[in-house]
Image (cartoon, rainbow, N blue to C red; front, side, top):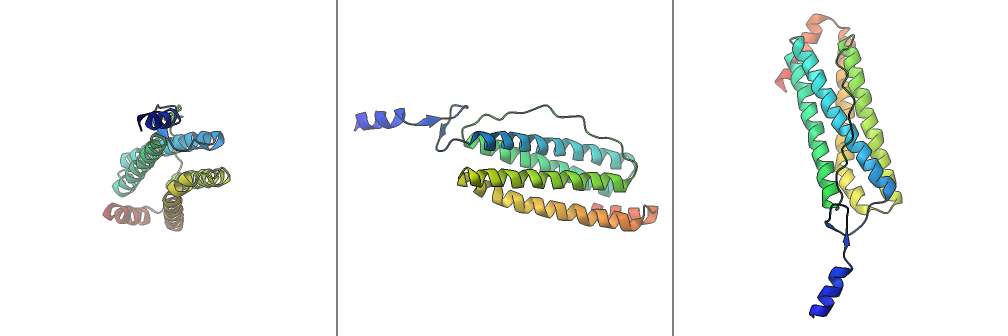
Length: 184
């Protein structure tokens, strides 16, 4: 019995972090996971910058909304990091660019945020596609609820962009939107 137990332990695979792993990552999938993790970290910092931009202009509802988005992106970062660690891999954190801190208008800022969400969705779709090609069901299952939440985020920003566009940057309309965001 002891002999078969020792034999079993010798055939166990270990990942780069030293944890036992059941399935290795496809190298392309792993690289894309690291890239997506960087995108989520960048979104976290960028949304924090946007929150500050609105706070400096006394638009506390917008500021709060973007601070919540920043926190949400950090929770995504944590989910991805936890997943990589659970799979036996080390988390590879890459440098982030400085966030954009100035915009010409609220509409430009909202459009920038929508584009960022759209890029995150595209990245998730690529991850999903690569995980399916690599027959990595674990990753596909992990990504399912994240893809759904990402589609909802895109919808939220499209809606907010439409409201701001309709307001035509009129201060009274912007203040109404700000109040609505503050109440959420």
